[in-house]
Length: 337
Image (cartoon, rainbow, N blue to C red):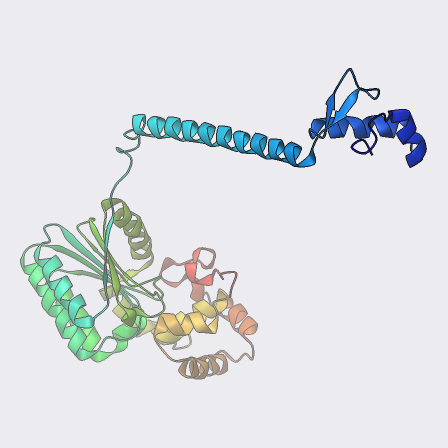
């Protein structure tokens, strides 16, 4: 209407549009902000209507100018941050330590890597073997590496799960390396397969539930010391090979003649470990574990896992070898289990 009627006035617009004078004033203010009306003293209305196309071009130009200003501001801020980053780049270098990790999947490559790594040893070798019973061939390779290290005066500490020591060729191997100077201990449960060399290199499985998937060789003293803490904790909870053999001879009379494998199952059952986790730690199939648990329940003369846990606690099986149930890592369920 302002474009069509040269002599318009806000009062006339209010009457024709049937709106209040306040609404007209607000509309005029908004149109002025958009550049569609310009103040003009010579006009009866006090405004001059502008060409909408020119007004929109002016608005677009203003937006582009604001964008360009913002772009320059961002560029300036980015340059300032970059300069500050360069100034402070050396602050954390002393606290940062590079960690080199090698992935070794092929069994032949694992054997070659261990051969070379042990040849460079000058201090100690700590082994934690958790899993299925090793084959005769693997035991021969382990014995060869241990003999080579022991012959050079390397300190060797070996932790094995108790149930594999019942296998004749494994027991012969453990006795042999012990006579050659290795310190051997047995535990009913171990958290993972682990080897630490000179507190500078740690070998850990890529998949803790599938040792055959290969190993990670982590070259870092800080990481190796962390894994050393795990090893030391497990070492203190284990028993020397000689003491374990003597205990095996008497445990049948004092503890219902449970084998080391059954004793391990009993402890993990009592602390709430799932069947899947027990089978993985013992290196047996789910079907074999089910049969072993059934036999154990029959021998304990109970019908459920809960009753078995109560019976095991009554017989004081959980405190054998100094492993209190509250501190047993095997008894802590993860959220997924």
